[in-house]
Image (tube, rainbow, N blue to C red):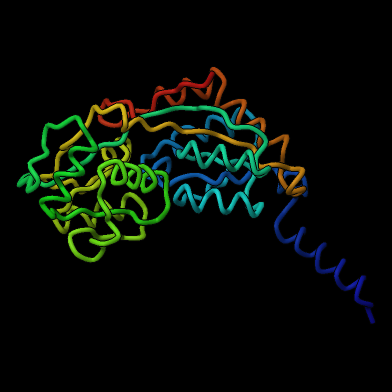
Length: 275
């Protein structure tokens, strides 16, 4: 009778035989990137990751969630690289020892989209804080992600600057979806609500109906993305060499060109700005 060690070895050998001649090293040649729904919903990662994978031989597995959740996942060591868009939270993550260093990668902007009826009269405005105040005063429907994502953090900052307590309006004119950007846009369009969204997801979104960009062009709506290697000293399972290779590629000439070249309907969605 096989003892336990021999039995386990037999099972392992059988598994390797069943899956073919794939080495353990080849099976381990991947990294996990904790990123945002905007990089996924916009199609950016699907467009550029094959270039990196071909050049490096390293596969990339993306976990696309809100920035807040992505950071929490990285804090737990559930990933090798963090690619998100909430700079203060990213800098805190590094300062707390969760990440090695933060680097700018690319940017775009946020916009406020709304229904053709424009119940708050904000269409054409380029002052985002004033527009949020008008929406609140009109008690016009507003759909929020409500998920601690980078977009939600930006929205909360605007409400704060406008002096609006949206917590008091929750469930009334202010509706929190607790969902990603695409799902929130679907909900907002369905209920005729204003929505703060990153421009890349809006351009890629296929269910716009008659909604249009109502508010844009305010410097406050600038949307910076950063990339961070999860700290291998805190989480020994982090694939530091492979993760750093991805960061170097993303910030290098090839990655920055790939970002710039990604367009939807002739429109560039992200603008590289690695330093």
